[in-house]
Amino acid sequence: MVDNPLHDRHLPLTSVSSGKGHEVLADVYCYPVQIVNVYFVADPARDDWVLVDAGMPRCEDDIIRAAAERFGKNVPPRAIILTHGHFDHVGAVVELAEHWNVPVYAHPLELPYLTGQKHYAPPDTHAGGGIIPSLAGFFPREPIDLGARIRPLPEDGSVPCLADWRWLHTPGHTQGHISLFRDSDRALLAGDAFVTVRQESLYQVYTQHREISGPPRYFTPDWEAAYHSVQMLAGLMPTVAMTGHGRAMSGEALRDGLRCLLNNFEERAMPDR
Image 1 (tube, rainbow, N blue to C red):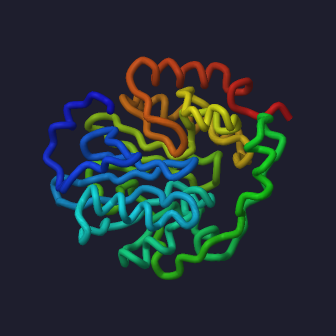
Image 2 (cartoon, rainbow, N blue to C red):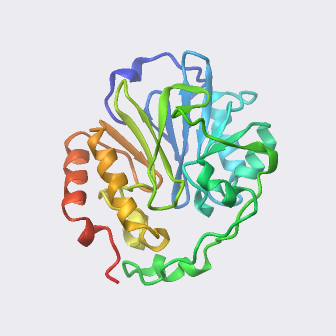
């Protein structure tokens, strides 16, 4: 857990899950689903919450169970916010949106991948070496179809149902990738704009060794945009970063890690080829 004065804030919680999930902040709960994280973000002023990303395919029962432990059985989220549309971030979104009867929001540039219109480009299976890139060719690339449930995020940067947060366009990993930022405490939900585990290494993914890394290499097509996105996020001087892959980082380790990543971006983030 990251030390933060917001940890004393009143939240509409019935209990804290005793499973694999954990609080990062008092109102942000991280729930790992296999290789990826989803986040339950509460709005204490309104006594409700929002789900950020939707994990791996067929994980909806686990997410529903964890949410019920956190907020109560009959307390669905107000909405689902997607950082982007890759399979490990939208795996259960159709089932969750139907189960809870809630809207789903994403950047307009991601909508073709969320309405059945467009496939993502093939992965670079040689990017970064290691087992995971070599298996990336088997990862799903086909679009999902959320139909009428999907909505574009507001153009003004506001986040539906989360008044204290704003969304930032952080392309590179995908065209319509977004991150969420809260100015009051400089908390950052970075999605895959950067991650805190070297996602190409099966060993590091398994051990969850903390290391600020660029977005997963095998599924990142635009490295110039990816660099500028990391540069923008580092310029916000976040106090805590919660990413799609890896454990949260804060304080000096976060600042130094982002500085090192930017100063050595070609070596530390980009594929050799």
